[in-house]
Image (cartoon, rainbow over all chains, first blue to last red):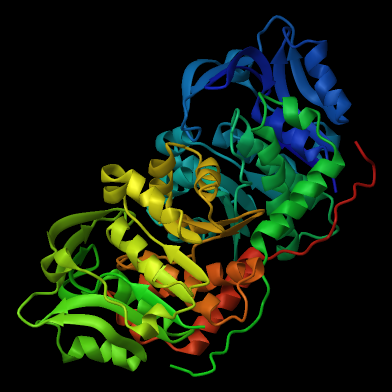
Amino acid sequence: MSLTVVGSVAFDALETPFGKRDKVLGGAATHFGLSASFFTEVNAVGVVGGDFGDAEWDVFKRHHINTDDIEVVPDGKTFFWSGRYDYDMNTAHTLDTQLNVFETFDPKLSDNSKGSKLLFLANILPMLQKGVREQCPDAKFVAMDTMNFWISSMKDAVIETIKVVDCIIINDAEARQLTDEPSIYKAARKIMDLGLRAVVIKRGEYGATLFTRDGYFAAPAYPLESVFDPTGAGDTFAGGFMGYLAAQNEITDDAMRRAMIYGSVMASFNVEKFGTERVDALDYPEINQRFADFKRMTHFDDIPFERATAA
Amino acid sequence: MSLTVVGSVAFDALETPFGKRDKVLGGAATHFGLSASFFTEVNAVGVVGGDFGDAEWDVFKRHHINTDDIEVVPDGKTFFWSGRYDYDMNTAHTLDTQLNVFETFDPKLSDNSKGSKLLFLANILPMLQKGVREQCPDAKFVAMDTMNFWISSMKDAVIETIKVVDCIIINDAEARQLTDEPSIYKAARKIMDLGLRAVVIKRGEYGATLFTRDGYFAAPAYPLESVFDPTGAGDTFAGGFMGYLAAQNEITDDAMRRAMIYGSVMASFNVEKFGTERVDALDYPEINQRFADFKRMTHFDDIPFERATAA
């Protein structure tokens, strides 16, 4: 099934305890698209400035991502984000944000993108997310991200958007903030009750959890001794999750469980190098090997216990 | 196989956002023993005062725990701990500690206890742990706990004790403190290199992870919407883990994976009520049901991915 992502395409400047990059390709639609491209055809909807060069377009081309709906504003500049991570890689410290052409981003979907069966609304203004969803009446499975800034400044708009999608993929702090519930289990059920089919809560180094109407699935994080650069890990996760689902004939709960693992696999690669470097260079044997690793680290035999002398 | 636990038997006073108890049965050997008793015969080694009454002894009796090696000091008082939890149930705030008879605890093992094949050294002075281990030459699998206080005040003694056991069961903060490694994966490998066969790291609401010489296993926590009282959860986990292993013919890596799940199952019950109340009243169908729940929430099909059009 076809998959469209709407979101940012950006340049990032990054500082981590392991090094520094002044300008790497980034943005939610970029990380998502690259990750999903290993599983399905992806249409990316976004906007860039005249400074977006051949090297950047080549990354999309290499992964057969359809960029027809990435608008170019020749005399504008691409969205720029600069951030620093200390040893606690769970928290990004924003040093600079220059929205540039992204400030007035108005997603324009071609008929091809509008006809997608799966749609991912990366983190943009909730009203824009809702508008895009309404332009895609044929979409069978729509997922969205959001962020703390929208939840604190326009929670109602976030909730109105949640009501028109099938799945939300957010981190644990966002789930708590959205519901005022300290327990992520209660938070997830409250969000689900807005009419969702699935709630995915990302928990950083602790993995990710999937709530469905009557199911719960916990995926651990891959045990990496060093996280090099976590930028884009969440969108890379979402790309693996949605990309895998797009490659299925039907979106069942079992398929969503496997999608959680593929999302975790892709995210685990993303953080091993700066920006898109690692995922850009991935191959299928590596992906399948890590999927098998996840199976080994979570599965156990089902030998029912019987005590000889019952207490 | 027989199992002996050496550790505290105590009275606890507890305050949580859900209620208050002035005096409940507690202590590491108690929580461990109760949990393990669902799987195997347990010998408990500890010390109590003359204030330890029939109601307390009855809990041990009911679960067929051998209390021959729990010394009674008739004119002494039982170890007393008082603590409070706020909504963040991961952190206990100690209000009062009265060591009483536990202050001069000198574990005296009968021949029966000394002959145990499995031994759990709950959190006591590391030199005492080492002494007990040396009294049990036939023990095939010895596990230990410890705490931040010993790690900061006598790290060398903790390390000397680790060197004579097979397995350590500690929380993530303790693993980091012991090794000065922020990554729990690196921390676990460093601890393993002291000569262990297995390192179990408890991560509170995020579950527990098992490191073996060449394996890694991640067990999530059971998704409880409310944690009522976390006191004793770690020892209850260890009791399920060691109790299950004691019931096996051989301690294999696969058995340890299942033991991780039984430990998680038992800990998930422990936190549902105050003190020992919930585990004391448990039955086998409940345990087996929750084991099956863990299987459902972690397992996924292994359908290898193949993309029709490779990128």
